[in-house]
Image 1 (tube, rainbow, N blue to C red):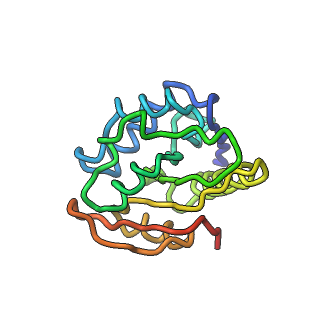
Image 2 (image 1 turned 90 degrees about the vertical axis):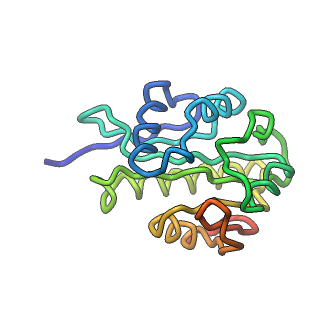
Length: 184
């Protein structure tokens, strides 16, 4: 059976879709790395932080990415390796609404284990790249990028984004950073 998927982002991401993203978090992350209330507070500050892929046949979220501009201070805490992102406050999130350089934090990217080798991950990746390209056209440049990597799959994605490992964290992950993103 051929499946169709749709990618949503920003204000088109509903609360139901966010709940679907949280269900994916439960597949992918230990409890200490899940923070539904924190994610909701970040989204209230900047609705543009989520992109999700929905399986049109079931209405279920099968992939999502949570990436947001953050303050320089939050970026430094995140790359220190001593701070877990679910402890960030909404005040750490920035709305990149004018030209300039920003810090980007890729909090999570999850593809449902049943769709890992399929279309949803590719759709999400392309959509994310297009969104960043649109920011660039508006003069918004993400000159510092960070991600806290918990799995070998995520490590491959970080490398694909052109990020390099800066250090191991105190919470058994690896901190990856880059000066912008490249899509190899």
